[in-house]
Image 1 (cartoon, protein in one colour):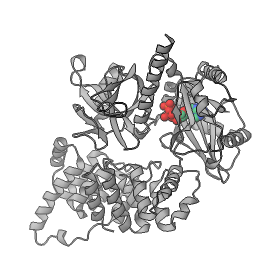
Image 2 (image 1 turned 90 degrees about the vertical axis):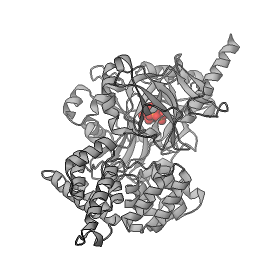
Image 3 (image 1 turned 120 degrees about the horizontal axis):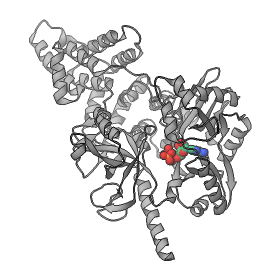
Image 4 (image 1 turned 60 degrees about the horizontal axis):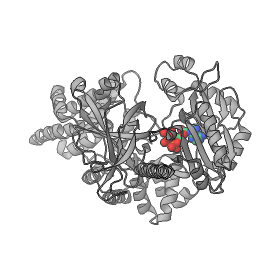
Length: 600
Ligand code: ATP
């Protein structure tokens, strides 16, 4: 299949922000695409070569890409560099430079450029894969050679998209859910099928694989889909409430309560006869950060293959006390892992089992899962089950909550005991409810917001980014809606580094997935998430979060937002606090106010 056909679809998609139009374009693409190619087409459309959890980088720095463009267009590197400085997007630079080069070539009647075969998707994918796999001495030259050759054979427009893919900037704004919609329409048609297809995606985190299974084996293969160790499962998430009585009502009067440990969520995968892999909440492979966790886990869990979830927590080996999240973040480093392991020992608290020796536990209710987990785990000094208790009244829930907080936890996670309490991968729902410490203070709970823009500072912050435009995630529209501007809580160090941190994500227009009435000095691609605490939520005419939800023409804003110091690099933009959650928090706040008024 010609790469130009993919490029045509990319063009259509880039020109719209409407999800339905994107879906239509994708359906046309998938219908035309040969089944053996569909997984590759899906990955390329996501701007990558492999599913997200396989972190094989293409490893081409801007400088190398500039060399390739210069070589393919037969012009000086300095010229490409100059264009890049003024335009800021290597893809566009490639398009311009190659158009110029090609015009030159057409003037030359002996040139072979006109007779060139069109490049295929297979060729582009194959070359990108070769670039990714080329490693070791001399690899830079080899990568440059492969990409230069590919660009030479590509049209200027094709080169633009190839370069954006290679540089990791192909941001077409297509959400995973839109790809799932398109796959459902192309291969099945009915809405119920969508749920089953989405489930397979949630269990595999691999849209390419889901597409391939649908195209080659049909819908039945997805109905029978089971978790597979080695492929991370998209995590089940909790709703939040601030009142034990309400929580118990939601849980039909009885529930399990577990400590909510303040660490890093981990999914532990053991593939038969293989070593253990660890995946983060964002499905990154974090195995190499935690050799100690792996050692103790392998002693504690005797199954041949499994997927088990827990929270990695920093702890003090002398006292056995749990330490805060920040301590654990010292373990998130590329180099000096052994040294960090000595200084910041980690332990793990296990809370769920999703797969064990061929059995899919995601379809079992929570009590069965927890029961099985507690039977197989042999606790040791570093690996323990999450503290848990069954309660049937608000007082006991409150007491357990206080115990959790005094043991260094953030609060508790309340879990449904009902027969429906399966593991709902990738979903935030009421089967789990978090009840956190912060609710009890004057302030609203912390929220995790996505950075979508920046404002230049004044005074001491002149010439630097002084405040940020922050947004919540609208999971229905798959967009980011602004909720506040935040300038406090940042240290001098934060302010100093801010520009460098955001530089790769600065764009010269509002991102297609951002919904904002405010125009900041700099637009930033929604990628980075930070934790914010505020005083209250108010109605706002200028923010788009929850627009019209409470009052016609008004959105919601967080008043006096302050950065807590916690960069949530463990969260992707779609993991940020949702618009629905902010609306719910606003309603809770109103209710509390009314109750307080009634009392007084
Ligand atoms: P937060 O920002 O509050 O950690 P989150 O968006 O990461 O929330 P939620 O589902 O809302 O995820 O809250 C549950 C989180 O709490 C999990 O992602 C996990 O990291 C952590 N956690 C700690 N202890 C437990 C437990 N016993 N059961 C489930 N999750 C737990």
